[in-house]
Length: 136
Image 1 (cartoon, helix red, strand yellow):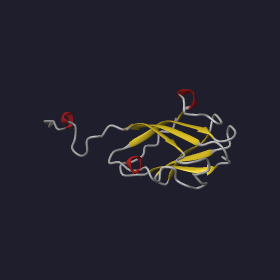
Image 2 (image 1 turned 90 degrees about the vertical axis):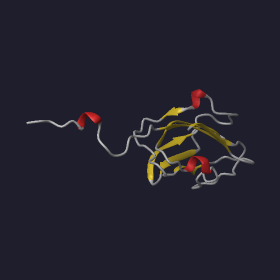
Image 3 (image 1 turned 120 degrees about the horizontal axis):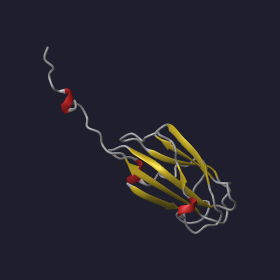
């Protein structure tokens, strides 16, 4: 899928606590193939570490992340945190970012994610080497 970058739409404080930030982003919510978020970056808010976001694949929690820089204009490569989770977002399962805590009063939040598509596996059948008949 690639790189996804979201910023609060109008002003600081538009996103509320317990809201799914990706609600209006239908093009990332569900897809017909497996995906994995490999990196995530959160910047903005009034102080470092005061904004907390929870990443979920469907009902499964992948991790909780905090903002790394306050009052930043955009997410840089230094702000991206690698995800070491081996969880995979299954096909047709929703990726959600839930805002758990935020004290943003003056600065907008920015969230960036690196979403990788997992190669489709062959469904059904056997490898050709297993189809060989063995004679007795």
